[in-house]
Image 1: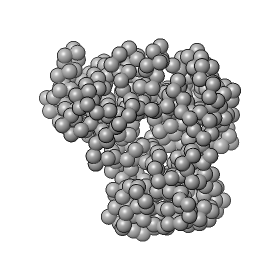
Image 2 (image 1 turned 90 degrees about the horizontal axis):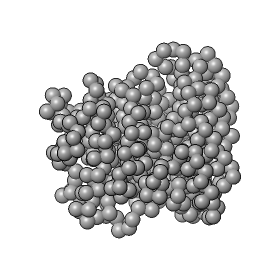
Image 3 (image 1 turned 120 degrees about the vertical axis):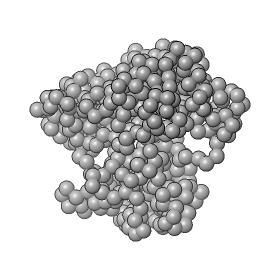
Length: 490
């Protein structure tokens, strides 16, 4: 069985609505966040769609103003770290000139959280090419005064029918169906309504504005649909009314005659050369270990894009797709990316590993979790036979996502039915198989984290000890495979 990509990092589902007592402080390109390694800027890249020219500007900004690295987020956005406190104006000028900020940047740059199926229109597998929806929704969002009230965490997903980005627990989901129709839902796919492709972007905006009205009615500061109180949850009948009032033809699934919408279950692009429908042009797919790239790696990707369609697609799985490459030269181009340290082969252990920032970037972290993760992966590669994907990081065919956390907050842990949960503590790492699917296998997870099966406490921060503990986590009782884990969360 091929290894599945780990679910992108996200907050775990909650049984009770969250009560927010403050405004959203999510970082942006203009609102910098103070971290222990300097200031952080998060640049929204709607749909992950980025021109090679804009990518070159980001690399220049990282070198001139930051620490010489770019981080990919679980929403296909880009972060710059190590920024100086006084660089905000210069950064904004650079980003604005490159088209990386909207006209109403002061009020809208943080609300452009749009993910889209990364391979849409490239491999012939979806029901429709949804990439045109990205720009249309972005323009309508930025033109809506009401949309400025969305939090920096509110998420739109534009899925071409393969079921990849609708699995990311978005607040507003659009799923392309056949015959020029699409499904739209907020709280639950069972309450989806059907609309035409031509109305999809505006319909998504109507759903977001409905959410904002519900927030005002509830008198809360909910940032996401899941945080609304039960009595103020969004209802499909009211969404239908609002869509029709806007002049959008919309029907419930039952009225449309299609019944309950059931998205397919797929995951993000695997690394490698991805064939196109005509056989002459292909896409390159690479992963950035832990989502972090040097500007040298980034510029190499931009150069590869310039030789192709001139576009990069950043994925919510911390990967990069380079479309429109010549099939004859693609293997050589992919080899260059591999030589630069990017992951280009399926089955690599980095497909399963995520981590929070850890030391030295976060003052709350108790360990340099990224360095420890790299040490374990390096050990795996050193002892594994050529072509063998099994090892200390977990066997590729049955591996769970592995998430490294520098403290009990577990920032960025996967949204999954089960994952391996490594949490740094004063006396070493606590390790558990966390998540609802693991809860029946034993006692609760370490600390105050997600419910699951505890494995070990106080694991020394050495590669050999950590690798042995990870191997133990993947032994009996058998956890669900990563592919099963993904399907259970969708």
